[in-house]
Image (cartoon, rainbow, N blue to C red; front, side, top):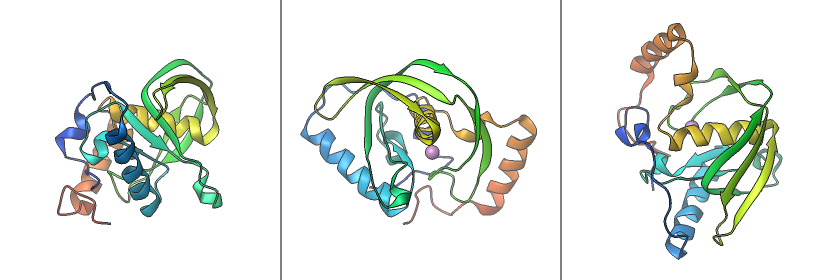
Length: 170
Ligand code: NI
């Protein structure tokens, strides 16, 4: 399993709903979690590892050495409010960070690994990470949320700094 980098077309596809939550999906999510912890990401969306399906994982507690994996399958944002600005990065755009405005509070619905629907309130870093990953499954990257001027600066930065392959070499 490898992380696709900016420029890979799958990152720009709108992902399709998960039709069946089965052992294969569980195994994929275990592998994604292993990879995310290895590269110390806060979240990882399925299309970042080449699977254009609507699921992602988030763990904002691992930094304190207390990992708490959150799995969101076929997620929906039911309500969103408030504003927060946070400096984001992305495993698909290694080395680049920028301040992005997001909703500070979310009320979401998703399915868990047992195929059960759940609803959850998210705030703080988990709300930010959720929105970043939700964007991924919609084919949106955090740099799309920058001003046009900053997007152009980013494109110049990327030309100089982009890795040779379209995969992250961890
Ligand atoms: Ni990302």
